[in-house]
Image (cartoon, rainbow, N blue to C red; front, side):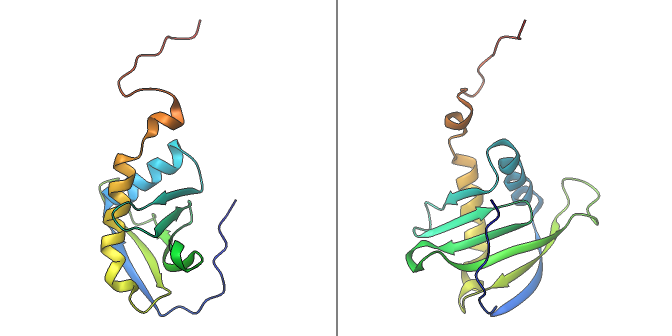
Length: 133
């Protein structure tokens, strides 16, 4: 189910480049786990990321899940390899969203690294599964 952004005015819209490692890790999590994917940021209590193929949204759970920042229109056409950054548009829905932009992306990356994927797959890291006969 696609997350519908409420009709809120944007404070600012920017074009930025996401580092390849952050974009790739989020895309991999969407493929392996679920879409849309909700990720609580443990290093930034109250913030929640909602990841979808077309957009990423950082919401504040303390203010009725009000969006703070959204990333959309990922430009993959200019990318020649998976090590290349990905351009996108960022919408700020809060006056101080620019302050938490990088920190929230770093917290998302950390949460995706430490996310217990064993619970979703039922497999332990490095476990060998039998070939079906």
